[in-house]
Length: 443
Image 1 (cartoon, helix red, strand yellow):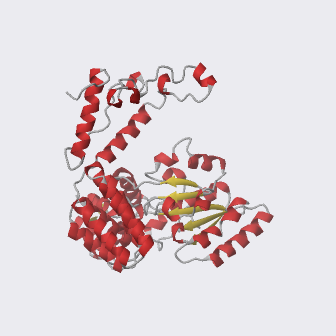
Image 2 (cartoon, rainbow, N blue to C red):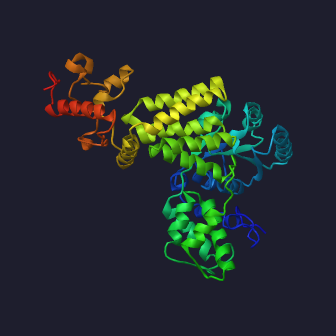
Image 3 (cartoon, rainbow, N blue to C red):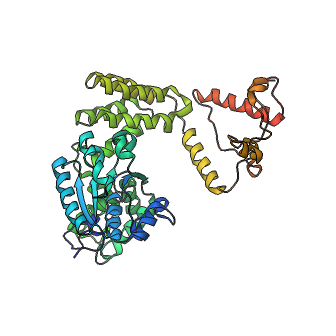
């Protein structure tokens, strides 16, 4: 008998399936979306599940969460893979769901890799989601804003899952090693360095962690060892299939290698990994999405033109297709790899979110509140606001933050590439602000 929400508990099942979380509390690394008051936690508590798209990297719990939602809703779990299924399969599921609906049963339709369905296939869901025949839960590793049609997006809630951090992965590893029924039952120990090697291989993916552990344990036990060493882990990692599989883990390894090569300013490596993916049949737009992400994450203000060039490559591929569009991709790849690098944007957003979390209750200063109606103005909204364009240099010293946050400093600009000019501009505005006047001169 399968554990609730989990996989086959029998010893013949893969470790990753046996250890699939059976209750929401066993889902690791997703506290942000499973905490008190969140959409998913409320769905678990009430059994009322809205149609969702779970967006996140492999091995972060998308399928598990879908199974648990079905269980807590008392719904029949109907899984489909967009890689192997078509409209005919969707119609068959809908027919079964309608039969259940007539007898008071509900159906949760889970579509893995939902972004791989084309427009017509995605359209096929719409009427049945609207009339409640099914609750649709899709899983995707691709940005839904790029890969799903607008009509479907408007009918679902998007929930973003994060890669698992080392602490969460370590807890998964600990359970795998210790649990008797579902795990390894303490039959093997970890030598120094083996744990770190496993976590590094995982790269935020619990499934990859457990698969690597299971392979390494098999190698160790075949050699008569009762302790897992870093050498066993390395040998297991090297034994994976190296042929490119656009639906498997190797896809994400190559995307990771490509992005890291761009970040590391190694143009030849970036071009090599890009060619590997394209020759393996990867969708060029998947590769360009990595470039768009890199342009802000790793270059940012050091060369703002990088983002524009990555977006231009996106447009070129959509207009020209292959192979002509690949020249625009190469142009963008080489530009991004050789551009100056800065992660100021990433750090600034992280700092801003932390500040917003720490000061969530601070009110907006009354003089910069919106005042669209006489009633709002009667409450003082907007009173005392000074319009910067009425002052020299389009600047006037006034508070834009609550008093408790006066002097808030979130951004640490770097003296690199074009960001040097941003440093100068930021310093100029700060000097004016410190003087507490309209900024009549640059001296």
